[in-house]
Length: 187
Image (cartoon, rainbow, N blue to C red; front, top):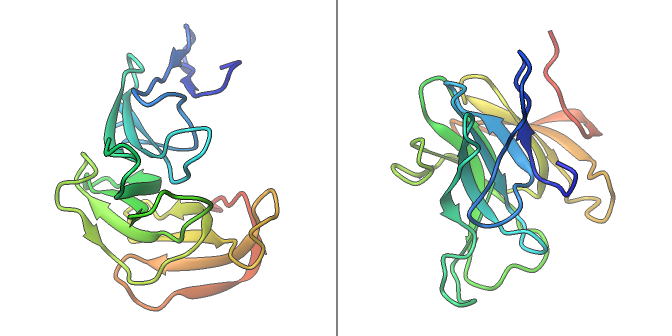
């Protein structure tokens, strides 16, 4: 959309479906649900846009808040910072997340989590380590994610950093020996 946000363009033609959110502009990290019926999107940063995790219906664009960034405590924490959602075929929703009691200023390191499709039921932290990440490229089954850790160069754009593979089983992180951004899986 011209003023920002996200839309779904039907492959067979027709009008775009504009996604909306009860918390303002639809921004940042988006991923299809495992059944293709909705889109998850998240923003782990406070600023001009709301932080939080949402799901929007692919047919209507109607968005619903799953994890509010500011739970409505009039500027008093805790503040939720979810990002980089992915729903695996088994229905689990994977994402990176942290919570802070202070009003978030700047970026926060995030840890790997999973929960049911609503983002909160059965929420479980999968790893003890945390990273300043600008990207997460999930494995199709949720068993891990390749991330870009930009902690060594926080003021660069696009946010480049070390490529690290994190298994969801909590085993040691694997340094991939490269740095970059805009990750994609190969054939």
